[in-house]
Image (spheres, rainbow, N blue to C red):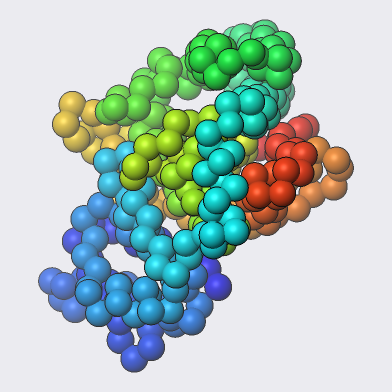
Length: 339
């Protein structure tokens, strides 16, 4: 089974003869069709209408529905709530500051190591060298390796968050050296102010949906955060696990698309003093993200596996750490994973 992303504004998604159809109401044309039994999750993007009949059918079948809008992902997960055997220890763990700090260190260390890896890979590229950004990438990569070591020894969540923020500033400042021609000066989220930020924000929403799906299948409550504070309606645990995959699943994909001239300013539109991807831009990034999930990437212990499988394994490992107290090993993207 797969995930169906519907990104085109103004379309309608409904059920017809055991299939999900995406139609354009203006002329009744069918843009896509997929058998219900092949759909594990439906991701609905802004401006898309879904019929009540289809939602009811998906809920009855226990399928997941994600509502993407304004930088957030809402998850509708009928029949996928964690069992009491998992929920009770998860609630206890979310209140255990020592456990939370240990897990948070792992998430952040893995993220910073992966950022260092990506900058190291980019430093080898001819375009980066031609623009005089090779040294900036290498220097920032070394700083991030050091910050990752410091993260492993942080003595509080507050200090860890401060360290992560400073390290990420180094990371995006180095990327700006190579992406400045796209208007990118650093990470800007609310609202995104340029092509790169719009693509990163949209890509992170796609990743959040994928990670949430993996955690729900592992029977974990996605709102009970460890590094990110638990808040009602906020998928804090999914945001935790996302830290391990932001670079390999999104940053590298965005870099490929803009570097290969497959994503450009023509794929953006102005919204509320900011910049968002337009329909075509969202479609391009969604397809590239789906392809990345199927792509083998390097494992820290050697060898390769599909990225989607790695995310699923990490969700299971997180469950084992929370529910059964087993040691947790985060995913870190190392050289050999491709970019």
